[in-house]
Amino acid sequence: MRKPQLLLWLLCALSALLMSLPWLVPHTGALALVAFVPLLFADEVARELKLRASWLMPAFVFVAWNAATTFWVCNATVGGGIFAICYNSLQMLLIWLLFRLAKRKMGGTLPYIFLAAMWIAWERVYFSLDMSWPWLTLGGAFARSTRTVQWYEYTGILGGSLWVWVVNLGVYGIVVAVLDGAWQRWNNVARACASIGILLAVAGPLVASKFIWSAYEERSEATVDVVIGQPNFDPYQKFESLPQAEQTRILLEEFAGALAKLPGAGASSVDAASSASSAARPVLLLAPETFTGDVVLNAPDDSRTLQSFRAFLAEHPGAELLFGASTYDIYDTHAAPTILARRYGDGWIVSHNSALMARAEGPVEVYHKSKLVVGTELTPYPRIFVPLDDWLSAKMGVGGLMGRCVGQDGASLLHFGPQRLPLGCAVCYESVYGEYCTEYVKAGAQALTIITNDAWWGNTPGYRQHLSFAALRAIELRRDIARCGNTGISCFIDQRGEILSQSDWWTRQTLTGQINLSTAQTAFVRHGDIPGRLSTLVFLLLAAFLLVRLVTKR
Image 1: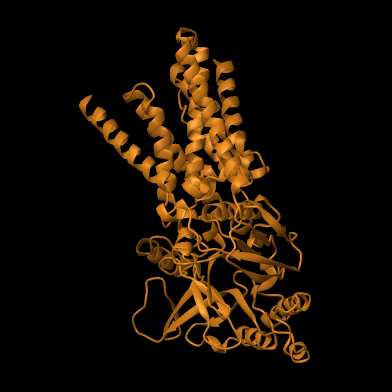
Image 2 (image 1 turned 90 degrees about the horizontal axis):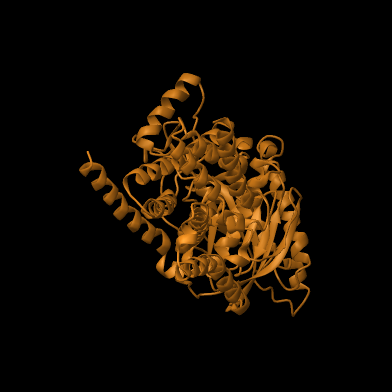
């Protein structure tokens, strides 16, 4: 019995490896198309041998996959990283155990269809939960193989998840048929249909993607000059070792140097006055997430950082600055304005992670990050966890264990230039949410910006994975993207998901380029997540059927 068990564990280890590599090694997304096959074999053999505690095998696979690909979260928060690994793995294991139950109660291929539909339905729901961590959505396996998934403009990322399951189950079914002799009993037509079917499942999306890639032409109804500032401040020292005024000075010096090299864009007022032909054209300056923390929304003009920005923009006509900030609303009321508010003197304070568009004069536009990181920014299900957090914080003598940022309801736009061109700004984690990002385009965004601070994770796969998801958003939305990271990687991405230019990791530099503007909408933007909705419907129908079988066979 030991040899079969060892073989089963090796199959499980192989599955974990095949699942992990697409998130760790560029251009290995195709491995996801067979990653579940070893686990499916191990699970079936364990069932036939009636091994005890065989649930440990899928549990091992899911924990190993999550740990190998998202261990870097522990660099920012050890407890949060361990929780994320366990929380994700547990949900995957529950799906697998329901699949096992279905195999006992439903015959033929139905349990496998149930498994695929249930997994994709879970991924779809996961995007909308308070405690959401969809980093390992199966369609994300192709984030660094973007030439193979150009059809995401029609299906979104869950179309990739569906592809993964169709190929895995098809390959598994054919191999099982060969091993148990069924293949030899099939007639020639059946064998030809099975072979052609799996060939189409694998090659069809690849051929379609190649065709779309070759035929696609970048849409450009206008262009915007963009200068991305990557100030490269260590977040673990940023708030203690370097005053905000000094950080602001460094960033503006970097911008000034870049603008001086950009003819006609944001020229200094002195240079502009000395040249009769120097009509400054608009230029967007892009700074990272949470660059400053001194913006009180009750009186934003009192922010010294914003004052410095305005003074700089006044000296550089045509330039406008989009930057990230930790912002606050202060309430002088007896009752809390929201359950997430914290005491502030005799009143309350409400925190936000915001993106702001600043001009030399006029009001500042503000967008509050909506998709917040659980724990560090968001207290999920606040009616349950806020009292618990208050109690634990009081016991431990700390100000709070979980973040209580308040996001806005849905996406809204920021506007740039004399024509007030509409732009979307995804703040950090929001760029992981494909269907959420469609809201920017539905609202009229002609290009997308992303501001982030990935330095918390250190030099790990985390920041590279986060960057790669931005490429998928470019394909889904067919929008140019300008991405700014505090320590990198900052980049320009075109509408095919190609990175046109990028900064180095952990360096102070600027990046200059143009983004194209487009008003066209993809099928994914117009119709949303069709694979996810269809999978949810199939799952609910099969779940009802399974429930009936459970009740009637008692």
